Image 1 (cartoon, rainbow, N blue to C red):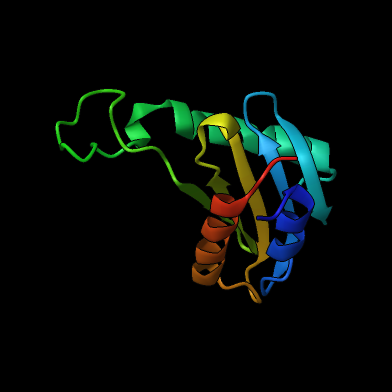
Image 2: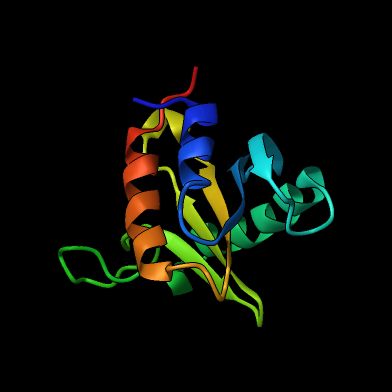
Length: 134
């Protein structure tokens, strides 16, 4: 099972990867980062993407009804990932789904011309599932 550094290095092997980070969305701090920062520096990028992640994770408008299909507020399935598309790239935020890792996500920045968004979503899901915090 990879730690943060191994996870980020593996994410950077994806076609078109420009930068990656593991971020705590409750504090806005990057626990690790590699490659180019999307917003000037890794700390600013982490804080700004954390705001987006927090909004999606905390608002019921983004959660589909749970398996029971009751549609009760606050009872929906959790957000798995977010995709933000720009003219030159994709930003993929994948939430880490473990009780003890609550509030973490992996941010991957892909070049739009060279990146493969479908492949990145699959590989990032597997990385987030295997991520171990040391």
